[in-house]
Length: 309
Image (cartoon, rainbow, N blue to C red):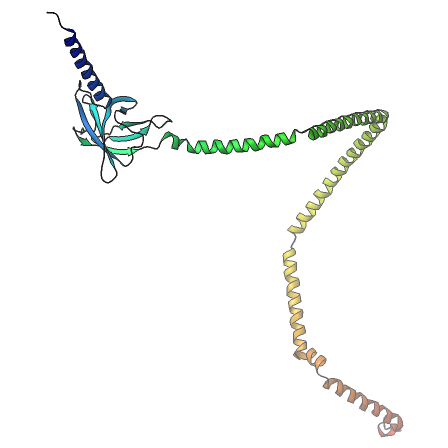
């Protein structure tokens, strides 16, 4: 049976429409040729995420984003279709991450450790990771600061490398060369002086050696003196100096006690030194004795009787 052109065109049109629908469904994350489980996650922000974005586990794709719906509270419910051959623990974390610097997004499943598996249409935990651009922001800031400093350094170098500076550098090198020549001439003069005075230098060194030898001998004598002084110090330390000092202290204490008694009119010596009555009595007796001697000279018969037998 021969098919007409209209029938062929209709069949091709139907096949093309079917392929178009299936392709559009696949691009939206609906794989009609394989069975899958649906999971959900709720995000406060889904910037850059679109339907058909991959769902990855350690970089391996296990599904796609199949639908997105905004709730009244501003959060977004994201639906994932995961091949049913992959088991997803119930405490798995669905993290929204950046895949490139241009803002591309994907969902990364961080599989949990629970032995209980998530069931079809379960809601998983959600998290949003910072974008790569945000992560590189501190590096960008440091690079900008570095470029600013580099620009300032280059400007300073340009200011330094001006013709005036180069002339100054040339003059500095010329001055250094002249200084080196002068230093070389001075060095030659010093060499000549040292060569002509070698004999004197040798004599000085010989005298210094003799002085060093004498100093060494003197050191030996000083060692003997030090030894004698050490022996004298040892003998002095071994002597009964402490007892002598104690006796001297006792004698001084006794003398001090005696002086105190004299000063306080205690004892005969104290009375003699501090009481003038004895002095006055002695003075009065001396006057009477003197008057007696005068009277005896004048009137001896009054005191002496002579009898002649």
